[in-house]
Length: 350
Ligand code: CP3
Image: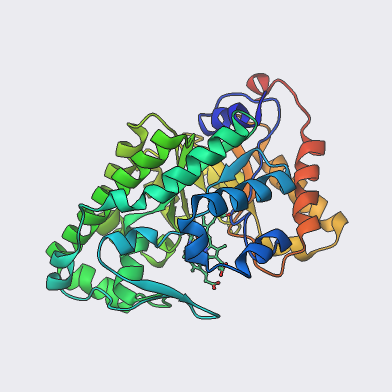
């Protein structure tokens, strides 16, 4: 079985020869090869240069020998074509210069320039022709809520006060913002699929800031529309968020093929509560990568034990690799996943 078919089959809950593995933020600052490119180019420069973006994507996936590569890009890129400038300030994270705060600000956002994001699709086609079937290729975009929160807060946030204020007090502006985002994101995902992405991951990283009721009333409908639109392009969708234990049953209602799990909920419990109705991805605590080999191996095997060789598990972390992570420990995890797999006929397992 090739990396691509192993990964895509697991997304669709079909039996595989062994559990596929890849890592959130597998190309990033913890890797010397990335640092070397980054020394001469800003993050956005790398994203906008298909040669560099493809190189960074390929180098990381090959160095780790994973079953899937995720295209090197950033969640915030679509903001620019909608009319919002942003930058990454060292140590501060992203800063959006004129945050969206009013119905007027929402009305000014453009939805007709998604073609400006074609550099991401260009990078995807280079990575696709490099790997062919050897590794799956993941395209991605932000989810409407998480991107709206960056647009409104102007960066990361602790309490999402501006976001929730607009959501509660200006529901029609909120709805219009989400619809505009979904319009751009659908076209952006379509470009990526057309260029060769096998799967699209939708990052709703900050959905965990929402109560169940707010998620259901203000976020679930548009997210469901986006998930279905992306699936209609002919690829599986992975829907990922952090601190989502209580939201998982609602996130399941989007119809996503795979839900990404953070590390706080045991994988077996989360999957059972989802009635095994979708595949799951996760969910090792990324900080476990700072432990010694014996404990790391045990924790990796515990995640796999919880998945119990059921079809539809993709091994990953519960959130992204952090910059200080020793790269050899990430490579060890790949080894531990491979050595574990008992390779029973997964279909005959209870
Ligand atoms: O290998 C990969 O995972 C692909 C690349 C990737 C990046 N960003 C590159 C990047 C992916 C999938 C993302 C998604 C992304 N971007 C998310 C969702 C994922 C998640 O962690 O939940 C979010 C929230 C963003 C927005 C963003 N971009 C933040 C909050 C930051 C951190 C700022 C900082 O300085 O730590 C970034 C920067 C960023 N995007 C880096 C990378 C490799 C690190 C910064 C650098 O090289 O300067």
